[in-house]
Length: 147
Image (cartoon, rainbow, N blue to C red):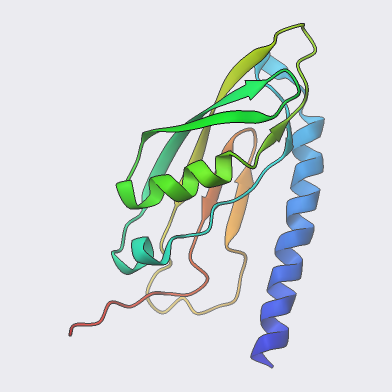
């Protein structure tokens, strides 16, 4: 039963991700910001969860004329979370430049939030907030051992 429950959660994440990708793309390029065509959420690093590392990681991405991310650099955030945020940022796709610009940049924010002790309810591990924020939680509460 736990396996089927896990697959149901995974399927829900995929469906919500597809819906959010469509919602992001419909936002357009308001305020000179490139529109998101597809977004990826980082996996919560197990070592970071075990160390109770949480918080925001800001990543600046370089975007080429095709809307592809060509560079990702952490600007701030916990060292244990930066690699996961940069890897996810490299998977994002933006709408191609319509104004003739050959390159651009965007600042993405990844929020890593640990679940509270006792929160064992199944649920989504990623929440996308337009235009450029993703909040992630580990799939289960990680308890540190006192060995």
